[in-house]
Image 1: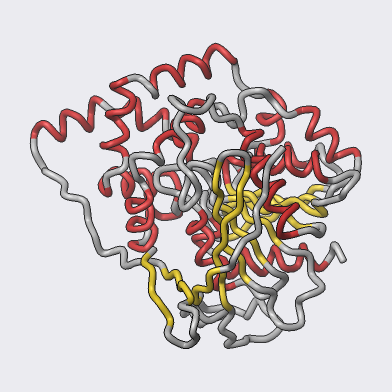
Image 2 (image 1 turned 30 degrees about the vertical axis):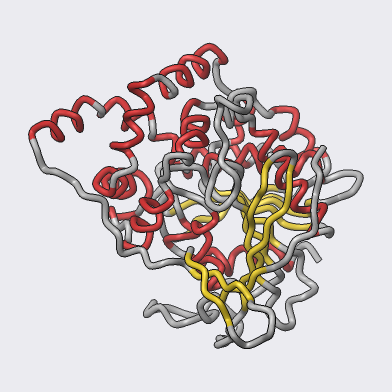
Length: 382
């Protein structure tokens, strides 16, 4: 983001806008490069899980306005409108920070659309992967016409503080869950719908289980392209996760990150695993490459080692099932795991699965359809 100053008031207001994403990383087409590509094919396979692709002290936050694109701009799609009305409304998206433990955490907030103030707010949780952060929800935010929305940058991602295992302990998913609980306690303060993309589904499940009773902070859960509930119940072998982590954080593993964050690999991986028809767009590629900084590698390693799903979450799934927590699962029409998700979702009586156009990043591929489906889900909760 670049900082622009407004002269419309005596106090200079900091306005954040997405900076131009025109910078490309150089790439040499040499024999050495091709040798590296083939030698790292096992690493490519190890990064395949990305397609499924944290007590705190809180300080007050000053919102920093930045203008989002107009809501509901026509995108040249055919077929019937998914919204009751089409509205051309500019809605501000504001940025803020807060403290969670020793981390400064960032988020963006979009105000509720006029007339939708009574709908529950959304808490958006982005996936973890090469260069990913809350920008993953940009297209969705442009299309959203409902209650207010909070999109967090998880610790180690985007504008939130970096995480370094040399200075902090190994990052656990409970840290991200605690971070989101802090955001809720300081800013949301009412029952919300948690929306999680991909392999971060266990974070949403934990948050829902911890906040669905007592203070009732979560009234609904949306999982887009998640692992199956069976996979989340089982978890992973602890020794295998430790082995993965040891390799990824070794010198060869860390060196692989510099190859993996290059535009050629990001495009190759996105087309192969994430986008229907291999249609990763330029906006996606530029944002991912820009966000793939040196500091951003550690959350990617933690996720890819299997730390997010490692322990298994059978107790948490049973807890939200026991209280009848409404759950919406969104699966891409070209996602080969839809059948497995459908069978798994049937084990939860309050879970509904729908299929939308796309593959593994449906809120980006089909933001309008995703927004409409989640809006309909939210209306059933009031």
